[in-house]
Image (cartoon, rainbow, N blue to C red):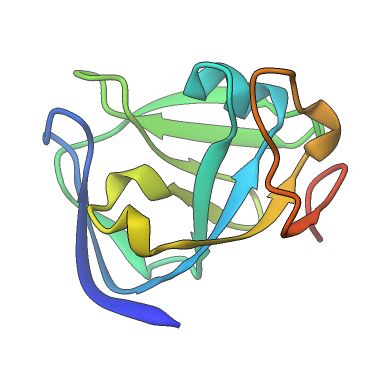
Length: 135
């Protein structure tokens, strides 16, 4: 299911992204990097084909990291407010659901890296949880 013509913004509004058809499906990632970036809980992510969401205003800063999986990840964020915008992996781009105003209309469909969960966050057990990343 898709919502149409969505515009997302970082906290300060310097970075703006546009998606013509935003999927409603969200994946929660509990890997240690996402927990650090989010302040302790999971990051809520939207995965779409490359090009379906684009940065249309501003320029992201990039932090390169090696993930728990061993893969290299480019973490794009706003240099002014620190908001995470997206992560670029070799196989896909993962956009942060919190950029979009209609987050209450999105639906959690899976948890990944559930084996890295901590006592501060609560995993939604109504959806499939993968110990590591989903294939």
